[in-house]
Image (cartoon, rainbow, N blue to C red):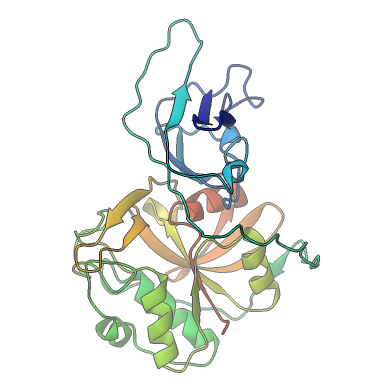
Length: 307
């Protein structure tokens, strides 16, 4: 069990409570938790148990962190990690608490109007090509996505017009023909904002998003629009879990989340059990849970056809 306590007020929440239960009587018995817990995540950490790390990605905590909304950040915060199994031991390498500050209390959010989404939807007519360079998946995804809306753009032309930076939120990081699987400032790639901005320069209606919900993507597909999504890639066109890292770029002083094996695919369909993505020239069906785990690592990023 992991608990977080605001020692100034005495308030405490359960961050994790026996992950792996009830799927397993004894919970998750594998090693290592390298994860970010966020109220805006898509899936609860409680049900996750991979090989190693046991839990990696961005997931919902057992109890909402918003319980601390309106409290002062200043003071001492205590994280307690306990494992009562007789023969287990371990250690906490590091942890941090990321707070969002405001001078005023946020206004209550109105209850959203329910939107009907079909249980399955598919965007027909999509085609794609394999990327020409090792790390230009974002450019390949962008030009295949733009083609769906009637814009013909060359992959290398798009890549050559992207800005370069040590900050993936500002431009392409590293050598597009470098080695995949690294994190900035090494060879890496680019996140959604520069891709969307360049697509708009070509005349395509595109906007970048972060912290989207699964229903946002479902609504996009149901409307007939594919979505470029940032996931963690593996061999044989697989999507895999990943480990989020906080990275601060020296040129912009901006801190963002990055991960090894950063990759983009185009989401083109979903059913109650799986999603279909266009990965280069191949359509791949992926279980929804696996997709959401992979999409979570880079904070649910996407480029959508919206203003």
